[in-house]
Length: 142
Image (cartoon, rainbow, N blue to C red):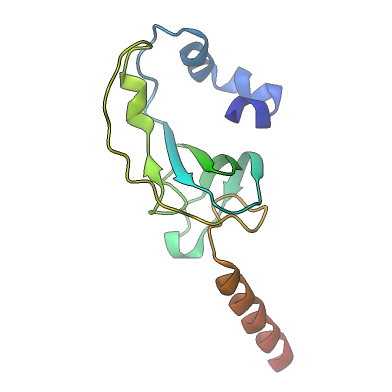
């Protein structure tokens, strides 16, 4: 899914990820890639190619993120980056399992809303409206 939302150049730059996807017997991939998931119960979907994201609360380190979300799941990939939100459930370790290997796993997936087109944005409608109002008040003061 994440390859489908990214430009074809993405494959050329991330050859080791391409090899992993095309070879079902390959186990593991470089540590620079991390994958996360969550439940998306919102009607909105999001399909974002690799994007640089700056989050003020995360300091000045940019986050390289690609996200695909469609009810009822969302998937996030980061490259050489921390996740954009600590509530995301990391599934990177799935790459250590063999193609036909069966495993019973308990997944405690968070339920995160998707209301904007911005990757890594899991604010509720109320949080978005509150920030809009705060911005309007700031503009009025200036």
